[in-house]
Length: 118
Length: 112
Image (cartoon, rainbow over the protein chains, first blue to last red):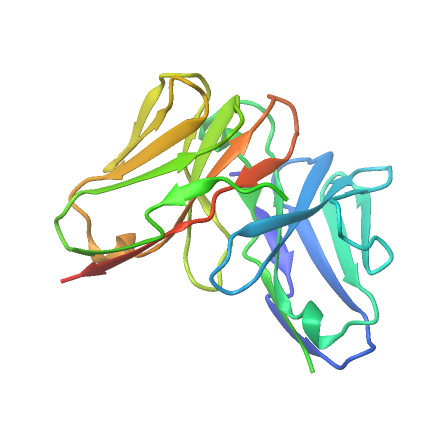
């Protein structure tokens, strides 16, 4: 149990276009999901906290108009990279926390999305 | 944002050897988590620690929640080739859905 699915796994887009990444909790409901960005050989940096039914909370330095987050249901959060530029190329990972109890008390992560902007 | 300091940064060991890595913070955490990440994948939870001094095992892995609540340790015994990957610690402040702070990572390579 406690599976988080992320889609797409890889995407290549042209500069100036927008890309949407989906994060779904498959077997549990998640009122809160998290979006991370990871550069090669670096750690995960939290971008924003996605809250179901309300606005996302962005970390300092993350442009909210650039990285639009929507959490319209208890099992789906989306991250849209708007007007993408090559410097937005990165590995984006989402996570969600299953309900209390069991081994998976810690956050479960999606398999990530490799975004390349050309 | 804040990151936790992990050491060593990388390790090259032979199959069968034991591995130790640690994670330190300037501030306390209520929960410590250890994850493993393989190339092109998201992190996978290995062990979760919930109180100071706690020692928890998961197969060949053993992790401890430091008594000061500012550090944690992960040991891998009798390493095997599939242990290769990047190991991240993560700290969390409270029991609710609060965010995780990740460590800088330890890259493990296992040679035959």
